[in-house]
Image 1 (cartoon, one colour):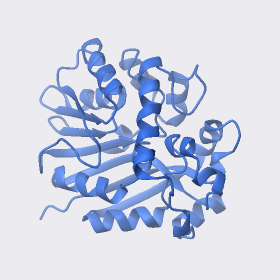
Image 2 (cartoon, rainbow, N blue to C red):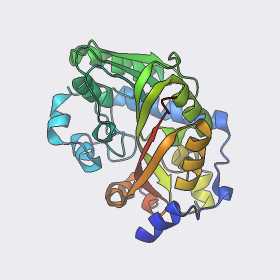
Image 3 (cartoon, helix red, strand yellow):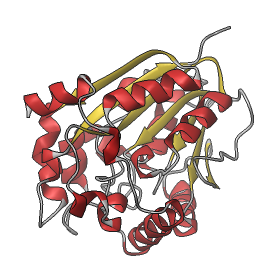
Length: 275
């Protein structure tokens, strides 16, 4: 596993591994998959019984899991972005691909009554579920908007912190995602993202498989690619840190293959310059 991480850091994976699934098809399969998850409530990658146990495995503390009412934690993440966000009272937070709202409700606890949290998701069923969870969690400072992360329904320079948890890999237009993130951040605003990165070339049966794309595997970019995308978008102080321990839960994401041979979870951080 360490050799895989080293190769990702060195940018040794090839551009030839770019996704060849059509962008429209990719969005369609992702939307369909997460609509189903929103409706039936099971997670995207692990067993149908997985909820709190999986959140603990990817980095959430027990008190965080217990603080949010049932129905918001769908076990969709590959990390805990709130743990790296260093949220402050009064900040405005945006969650890209907010799902059932779990990270939004955790962020609301950190920013307090003077803060604001906005979740954006492209799946109507998921937004409906998240809005229902607002009432269950008595979270008046949290709102959910329907929209694509490539075209955020958020005003320029209005957000202090952007969170995202294992979602950006699903986008067929990652440069546009980070350009939009840069646009909506205030000067000095920051990214705190948990996602997966590619550590080795994908075999064709993974790279061309729509289920692998929608299952948080085949859409992953290498660290070198992400660094270049973030730099082009204007971000500074970029830091991408692979998490070797994620092999333990990524291995469970596919019954037929071992995705940990190709991807690893990572934290992705960056900052919009103050001027």
